[in-house]
Image (cartoon, rainbow, N blue to C red):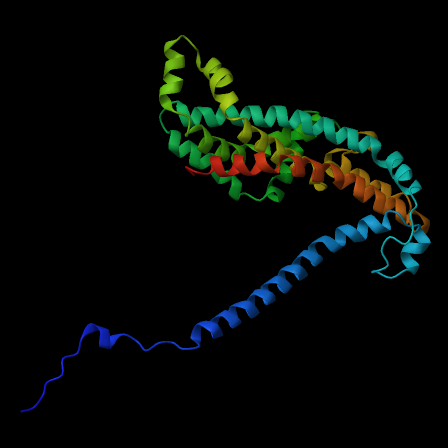
Length: 301
């Protein structure tokens, strides 16, 4: 009589892997060190230019050109910073004024527009919002000539308003896009109860919406400040008075004042440090609010 073997599900299971987990652990450990080494190289490549500029800002001009690239902090000439301050103090103050005015106008206008798109009802709202946001697709260089002609027709050439108004206007599409996503998360019942209590739309925006949306408003202010601080092309076009120039163009003028004189190399690097330090401080102390404003405002985008 022939015996019949019955295959059970347990028989279909794969055989024990034996040393496979140990081999996998060794490969995982090896790849971990590769990842750590790659990360270290990336960090070094990112921060070495900053250390290089800091080191050269404390050297004399002759020492900069005679020493090697990796000869760091071999000299400490703090006089370079006083020399650089005399050259960029005025542009630095001008930039603070332009940035403050641009923040007030740009963030306020974007808050009004985002509130209208988020809470008000009117015909063609979605199409108008899409057309508004589509301005982000237009390169800024294409608007230079029309913008310059507009500034010239309005007799704003060589004034701070030639900087403030374009900066505030160019920030609108992105800020409205971010602000609307944040405003959409405000409970409608909260706003409706304020209207029932007799608040107008202006009062609802000022007393209810604005206090609840401080992180995203701060995010908008940071974005406007970064745009103002890093722009070089537009100030050189519309500002011809050296006493009214902003920091990017002011640093370039300071560098050009030395010509081919190599003795001012340390002061030039010191000017670079002083020009970028406010942005490091701003982003460093407000990074938490900046990230929270972007992430919370992007939930419904």
